[in-house]
Image (cartoon, one colour):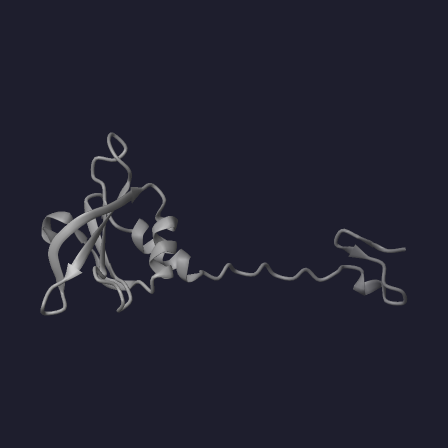
Length: 127
């Protein structure tokens, strides 16, 4: 005899006829999943800011969730911004790219050592 589904023939011990089932493992979030979820958590019209590694001339990446999506444009708009003399974002943003996939943005940020600079805020406050 052999193993069939959850039942197993065990020689000599009829009480051990049921095989043990291992509990399902929980999915551990990768850094890309974490950043993607941060971006997805931004409300419509909201803003989240990341800072890239030290070697970049324009180290601040501002991600805006498009309030007029799906009527026009893509869901996320990515802006690049330089550093002011005091080390904060300069306030002069240039549109970098737009996409509907936050996972693409997360991958791009992590490849450039991006880290969260400012948590999600409403666009009217950030302007």
